[in-house]
Image (cartoon, rainbow, N blue to C red):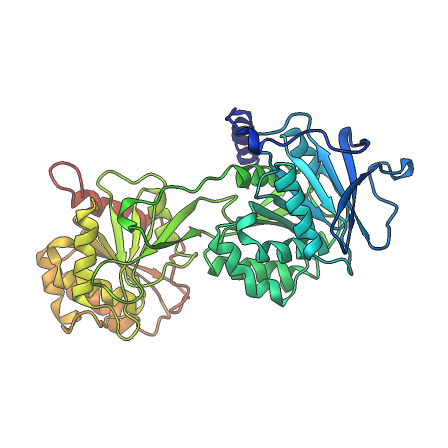
Length: 516
């Protein structure tokens, strides 16, 4: 990851925090608390005791020998702490830590400078999240005016506890920074709740930490499948300790962005009933990090473009509905890709097309049969009536490429080009023989491009057969062969030639007004 990205991100975050917005009096938190304050790394610290049974909270003064930490526990009472920023940021944001107070506090110190409150409730192997955490949350949000959605700082067991509370209260969390987190089966089973509320996650881990594969990677993989956003930094050669980063800027940037997020307005074409998730590449970036004096692996939406993915229904189309991935800035004419298969995170061509302003559309596929021609025709009409290009790119891998060819054969005047990855010329959508009807595509002047592995078992009967027949018909076709590959991987090693081919075809298919 280029270090300049951190600088730009830090500048943007600083600008966000500097923006002055009106905060209603009822939502304003006080910078003073009951009880006698002490100091925590130069900021005002207030201590409390919570009775574990009655949940009453009363102020106390930290003992002189505790300094920035905690040394004295009381049976039946939980130590709680609030540290106050010198100037509170709009919305009264706060970070919440349970377990290991004052351990590697550089992130929280930076957050204080950005106007965050810092809160802690005593936790340990036996003092787990429960009604005491709920009471502490209620005290801070209802009586002190703190934001309803804190961000979590969780290291090791603290990461586990952050996830336990957050998955039980997914609508009351802005984000989670977990550092070499622990976990359990309950957390893994409930991650979908966080994804449903679009809660972003950020992990910092050591490559040698024994918990990495057991929990952090498991959480990452599951959360991605739910369409949630999770970013990861893995420090090469580090074990479970030390936690955090010497320069916590990436963590702080994540937290600033998390609390500043607002729900984006969905595009009009998704209607009122939809499911929103996120789409981003999981490609690893491996760079030397000067602050850590180590190589670090970066992946996830904190380090790569992230796109909104909407699943929604269209009238008279039953089943799984339509899925559309939205580009950051649509290209002129709203070009789009029309395909039958789910778009995986290694879809390098689609990721590159999104960056060029293309929409990526997965058409409806009923649960009991494959794609249905009438439903795809209805989807095409619905989207083009909403301003999408009249000539989409047909795309697919394996048998889904066959469906792309099939729809194009049935609608040759409505296609800019066809791209297939290891195509299999079989279709549920059309009863026609696809190989025997390529002349329809050639007469319409539709360019074809296929990428196949040299060891793909379907190479001769599909990719080579398409190529031979289309050339004899006078059609334009390009085949890229990946030597040594079989049917997988489907994604090309270098997407650039395919992307340029597709973009050129879309432009050539444009009407007199320049719109595809």
